[in-house]
Length: 90
Image 1 (cartoon, rainbow, N blue to C red):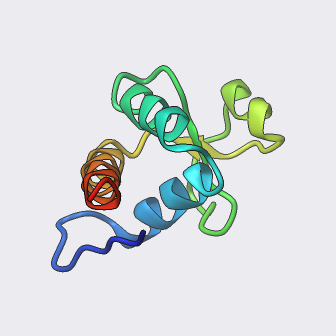
Image 2 (cartoon, rainbow, N blue to C red):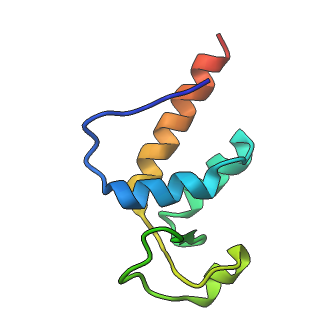
């Protein structure tokens, strides 16, 4: 099942990196991950757009050095993930 959003008030690069982080995860694991990002418990690794992104030790779990907490992107992706899950249950 696929979902998409339009006219979202989020940064596209942050949303891209957040979507890449949850790509391949099962829905419960991705939901837990996206809930932890705004609480600053888990970082999102920035592979593609890593210019001016701070380095941190917490990104080592992904094997990368650059990461952030894109809060609004995580909230929008969480909303879209829940919407896709509801649509798949039909």
